[in-house]
Length: 170
Image (cartoon, one colour):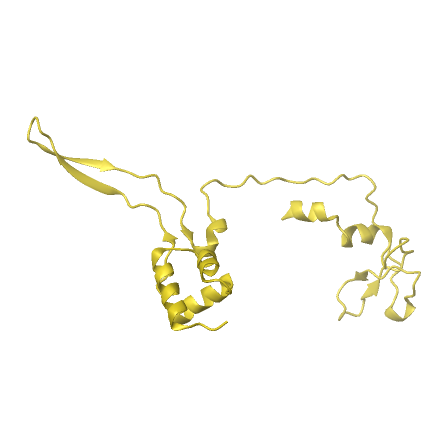
């Protein structure tokens, strides 16, 4: 698709009218929303669609009965600022409630490590590392692994958390 002068003029006109990139792409035909956005940036057209919180204004009103000037203050409720595609990143004043997740203590048994070296590992040993790999006392768990995976039952529970629990901890 080539950008002809007529299509560019139409793009400028529709952009100035405030149409979205998707709406402009639909009217031009044969062009995607991203192509419209790219062309708008290359043409350096003015950005628009930025909304901000309404400022607090003061109006002066004259009292008809007494002739006394009084200041009437009108306040607008501030709206969250929405800038372009970041509308979903709205910040709210309310603090989120922190929830403490307590895992059940039942069946928590820390196995005694057999402290195997790398050359002692095989398919029937737990490969959970113990300590710093650069230290002299570095070793592997070495206990019997679970039915599937490289770790014993205890280390498998640590290494492989259910997806729902991971989401909850964030």
